[in-house]
Amino acid sequence: MHVTGVHATEPLGDDDLDRLASAIDGWLAEVLAEHDRVLAVDRATGDVRRWYVRMQGTDKEFTTVWLTLGQRTLRYETHVMPAPEDNHSTVFERLLRRNERLVGAHFSIGAEDAVFLRGELFVAHVDRDEIDRVLGTLYDEVERSFRSLLRTGFPRFFAV
Image 1 (cartoon, one colour):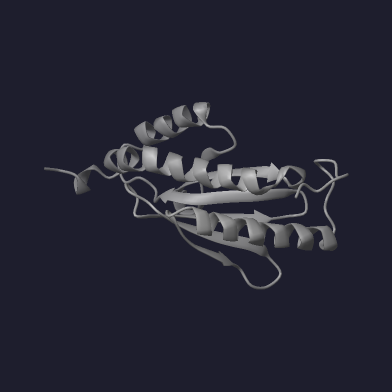
Image 2 (image 1 turned 180 degrees about the horizontal axis):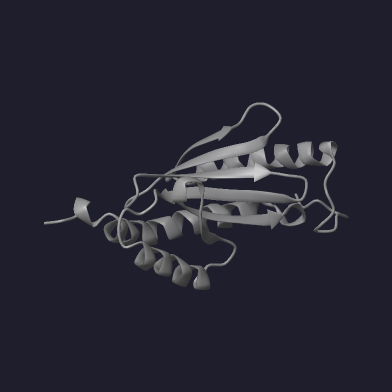
């Protein structure tokens, strides 16, 4: 379901947001049924249109992606790791270099200097394939980067 007739920057009204949220519910149910690594999909209660997608990892035990639907965009993010204890400049340089090759997502520093992977889509571009791509991109990037970032940012836990 693309939101037809909507320019990418036009805000959606409540009825269109409710229809899109309902479609997202269905798409996430399909993703949950189709992918073994997707363990759970939960929707926030209240006025916020937000979903939590929990995926089983290999290098990072779990990756949880938050999807938040707004009037103009679907924002997505996952917590990668807490603020590094050591080698800050090396960790941040690696993150910036990884940003160079990422499409539709970027590493950022959030609350308490924790490392996040974030992005957003205009609501006019949200569909089942894009949600699957977003979840796959975030999952794959966390799995590729987590261990090396952790070893660099927390070397005392890996000392021999």
